[in-house]
Length: 453
Image (cartoon, rainbow, N blue to C red):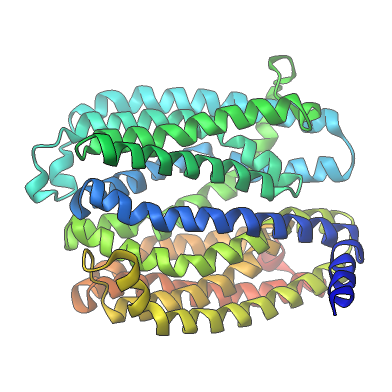
């Protein structure tokens, strides 16, 4: 029996297409790393809520969501670089790859500095206590806090490009190592703060925003001095022509990013305006539970974006068909897992956060359906992004961006917190239907018009 298991493991990691084997190794490594990250993140939530309180934690979640909106100002450079870098690596053109990496860092540095210089004077005139509907928390100096978070973000904005470089080379497990180390150090820091200090939102921000920044910096230095030295950024290799091509490739991704941010990051803002910061914590507790399934899916599917780019560049459609078929089987299995988790959710909430936060059953049901719909459409998006056929995704993204917030408000007022999740789910179902049709056309080489643009 043991020999049979050993033989299966050997074949799993050593038999098959090299592209598939690389993906398998990264998936298994990522699962092991992410398992630790999930455990830490689950322990971190009740620890943080007890260190401050649900309302203050909700303020942090909302502020971090607001600042994440600024990520759209990378002009789609990250996703554009991912596709270009994968193409150059597939063609073994490392000189061009390094030039593009260098140019991307240069542009992000300029954008980051400009963002901070523009936001600094504007922030003085914003009334964050009113914007966030903080109620009893009106004594907080949120303007300085927001400026601090934004400053951290502007630096991370540049440093996180290492994750794009690692993913483009189909090694997302290494980005998982970076994230795991950041989470572990954050957890240790919060433990120390909880033991030796009184709850402070300012200290919380320094830990949650500052530690990941330091880990990214150290990780970037390490990788560019070792395995990724051939594509390490250099001032001498910054080229205007490379920058222009990156902007051209990333411009459509840029608009799609805006739409995605409205879909994913507006929820906390709508909730805090409709129900107050405390309910942001309730919403995120439910999301965090079901995100375990989404985390697993993201780990498995992440290597396939760049793998699809490589396969499409080399015309390997048989491999693409096989990969999509296996991904759909995974979707079915994860859907069953989501239903099982829904059945267990009341018990899990009680064990996890006790009576500190009460999660309504209708919110858990909405999150379950959300997971199923999200995974279905995201499978097809990986192929669409990898091939660069993103015009249709652009149109649907704009459609969702315009209608999502009004629908969130409408359903939120009538259903409560669950209405926010149902709004997102409706759009994911629509996208899933359209993108599945486009995927079949691309695989069968029958895509024309907007399906092939």
